[in-house]
Image (cartoon, rainbow, N blue to C red; front, side, top):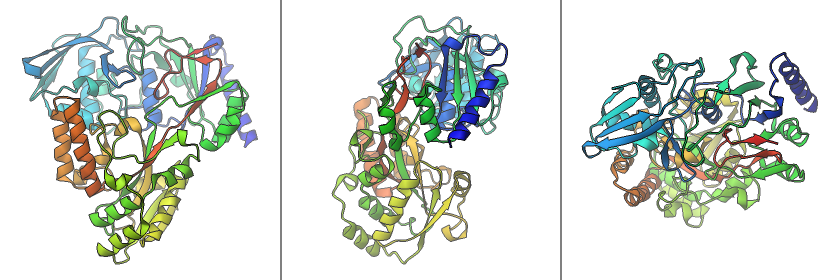
Length: 523
């Protein structure tokens, strides 16, 4: 293990020693992401590593502060007319793409349309839009069918997919086809010449970037002041290698060290460990609504009522309760998330769940539970399988690598004919904070996320949420959505992990939220 890490670092050092590459070595930050960056288009994919890459390279029309409130970012501001049915956005001066071309309104219009082809919140915005146009080089106009007060939230959303702005010629690419040329207008330039797939990605400060002249830096909002000349993403073969490199000072920042390595890292006084992202990750068990036994909502509810989230979080994270939360409902806890259903918070009673399964008419159909062997959720899948056996379900575990799992889970065949009954995954808390981009909660049948729940009531409540006039109304609707989800059970929440990040003590300005790099400095 150590030899592999040393070889990788040596290869990286040799490449970085090439002439002209390390002119600004004093301001180089070496970062270990949770996964390798295999896709560079943050619209086409929802993976978090690509989203984080996107915020280095691209900018957004609005940004979100730490309280997730939107603020103008690329736009100077907006004017609302016609009782909320017309929005006129004005780009601020000085915006340029990395190829030197100015950012124009038509680039933004094309980018918004492409993003809306992949993102649920973007799709909702465009469904409410009669006309999206660029009446001038700096002017963007939305003519809406009805008021859509969440327009700035949509154009500044920080969850996947990223509403990034790219040149029109690239934004005209179909949203189902990944863009491979990386040209943004954000604070860093992606250096394709130095990229080593599977090992290293390099970002250089964009000298032509003009930060906002006003506001306070907060999450993705406010002035983005760059203090680093280079950010190097170093992909490590495993978490142990990354932790050793961080301890030795060979890298500066490890995005997501696993819980079992935290005690060792905490003993190093040169390392800071903190929870920078309060939204964390929500782990879930996804159920297949098309085939027995989970086509029966009573059986789905019986399993939901048997789950003790603390068991799952202890297996995944350990006993340190500061790193996880249980009794998590269908939304990430927050001021407008609504009340968690009693079915999740009441005391567990496995005998009751077993009786409920029998009363629902369960006749021994196999539960094919697919497990991603290298996934962070591999441990919680074992807890779920054991639990389902204890309440009377006949479970057939099916371990496989993540690539095979991703291919299998989109199949709609019966579980015994190449399909599945349950799988395990996680979403960033930002993705589940409200109904807007919460794909796991959707109940739109064939168009839904794998599992294909069909719930007209969930969809109607979601539509009403978009039309809600204020936070109080949205909170009430979230409570109703949680209650309906407890009846329909599109998935089973397994708890919230609060993943710490670790970095060297000479690194300052690490932001709240996911990994962002403006404002970060290296002493």
